[in-house]
Structures are given as C-alpha cells and as structure tokens.
Image (cartoon, rainbow, N blue to C red):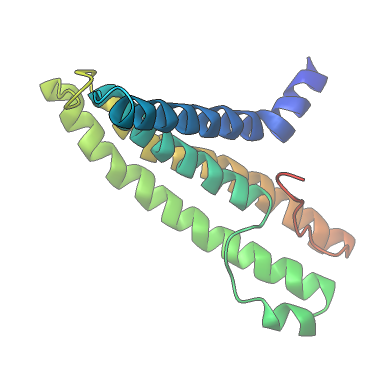
Length: 171
C-alpha cells in the first residue's frame, strides 16, 4: 500500500496531465473536423476542452511547485552556500503558502454562490460548481506540495545538503 501511495505521489499528477492534454487535443481536433468537413459544430467540444484546460493549468501549477519549475530569478542562488539556497527556497515556499491560503479562501466564494443558486454551464448545462472547484482544488494541491517542499527544505538545511532543484516532468 505504501508503495502505491509513493507511486501516486510521484506520478499521479503526470498521469492526470497526460489524460487532460490528450482529451483537449482530441476534443479540439474533433471540433475542427466537424466544423470544416461536416459544416457543423457543437458546444460541448469547445466547452469541455476549456474546462479540461483549466484543470490542466492548476494541476500543472502543483507539479511546478513540486519540481521547482516556476519562473524565478535565481542569480543570487549561485552565490550562496547550499544552506543559504535551501533557506531562500524555504522563504519562497512559505510566501507561496500564504498566497495559496488566501487564494483558497477567496476562491471558495464563487463556488458557494454557484452551489447555492445551482448555476449551470452555458452549453453543457452541468452544474458550474464542478468547474469552479478547479481553483480551490488546484491551490489545495499546491498547498500539499508546498508542505512537502517545506519539510524537504528543513531537512536539507539541518543536514547541510544542497536543496532539491527538481526533475524533468516529461523526458
């Protein structure tokens, strides 16, 4: 069971990103063929691709936090000892965690309003809550990855190891 959780922790988001990306490509390709070959298009293709892209972005943000792949200016990192670099990463993770807490809190308001009034999507007529939940779920996943990163950074500082700098997502 522990091995399964470890594999899920390492590859779960990558698997979801791959599924969502393939779905988006397939849905958009289908709509292009329908529009230009069959001279008919539907609402579901564009709308489902848009919502899948929203989830893809938020899951990708969590992966970027895990792999330290967000855009940053790291010139100063080259001049610091490993403990200083780990401390700087830790400081950035804490600031990002504060931002994530605010984002989770404020993104729940549209979700609750949509839930209260049973707001539905324009084309699919599905309750919009499932798509609005992408932001709080995404930031919750980011928060989870930040906690892992903070624990790892504290361990690196205590042990005097160089900090984790991330791996490639797709080779």
